[in-house]
Image 1 (spheres, helix red, strand yellow):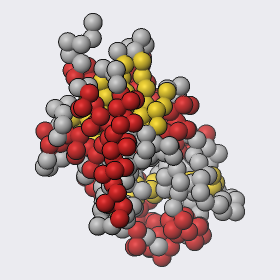
Image 2 (cartoon, helix red, strand yellow; image 1 turned 90 degrees about the vertical axis):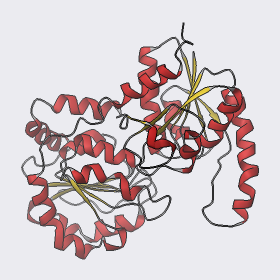
Image 3 (cartoon, one colour; image 1 turned 60 degrees about the vertical axis):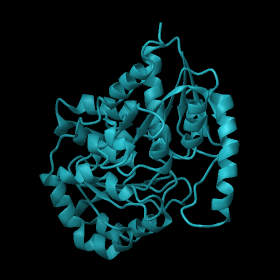
Length: 360
């Protein structure tokens, strides 16, 4: 079989696609697995590094306001559609994870008679997956969707990266010991509170500035901080009990070690924090489809996190609320959640169902 994975732009679209590709490959090593992405997305680093072939198609952005870009969007979509047809032709199945690349991929698959699966990670579905859901009966969502075609989708959760899933399994015997050990592995005291702050692979100038202005507060009373500033931001000066890095290589250990996590509420971050985190403060991205306002809902419902709007997140707010947040962490469950642990298997089963009668 030849399986095409459409997921590009951000880690939120690429990482789940890679997780499913690896799982499918482990079960079906004879199959050919290829990716469709855009020329400048994160997939250009992650997909080749995972030893999968990547086909590039033009990036199609659907403007949310009336503009010249909106008028030209159909022509851009048409170009991407034909490029996607060339990449998908001859495939037995396509699975898409949303983002810029998925809409033309879904249309191309439909025109070629190729069965396809849609997976939506966000609590509020984006345009591409809403479109795809109208064209296929094979749909999966991370969380229940209230209306539209995706309201009928299989609820699977989000496939965890292998390192996060493995960390969960290994921590199951003794979560207290696992969390203390993670602090030591990162070079911090296992007995003092540790805050993890990160805002995506690119980072956020605004939120990083708030963290930097709050160092005195965050490091008071033996506090410790690991700060992922993102690749596009300069590193603050090193201090005792404070480690700043452009990119946190071992996120699973960082999640385990942290008493408090401060982050955006992207779907993947919420899923990984749900699996390994203790307590989280989520700051939704104030632009885009608005999906980040909803992604953290399940973590918050468990009493393991809360949400604050970006304009309210200031150094003064941190000074007034840090002790409360750390107290919330102490009362939160010490163990992580296994709710997404079987997501990958569920999605692979749906893919197999879409191929029923075709695999020999």
